[in-house]
Length: 186
Image 1 (cartoon, helix red, strand yellow):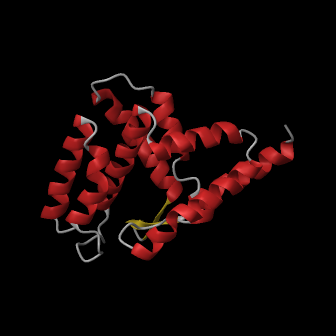
Image 2 (cartoon, rainbow, N blue to C red; image 1 turned 90 degrees about the vertical axis):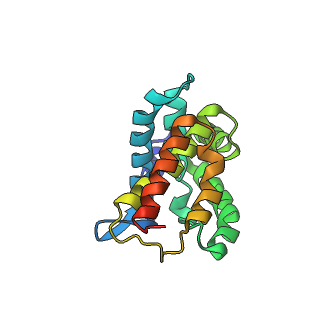
């Protein structure tokens, strides 16, 4: 392996810290890197409450890489139909670009394919955690309101298919949604 290829990979992937998401952290937008870290933390805590054996390392790999394509594709907000129309195409191009310089591109592509197609229970759990994280962030976002376009029905339509696959994530989601509605954040 060439050291220059490794440096290129590390400097490009580090750019995930600069990708803004739709939710706020204090007086600024959350970055995709912060979202990935938060997903890892939530997964680590919640895994103890899953009633089936899951490979923690696989869950962590999915969550670590699940939004890396946003380095080039950006974050698509699911309350914006125009962004969502372009999401798949932009992410596929970003995946190709990242794969072109990563020294471990075969492993990266395999992780991304398993996650995107929910080929494993671990990838299903990781997706459920991805959904839970956004609800937690929204709960903590003092600026969030039901005027942001993220309605309860939109969030349910987007997240329920994923969170419902595990009793703990389903219960967490329902409790979080109840609180978000009470606080008029959705």
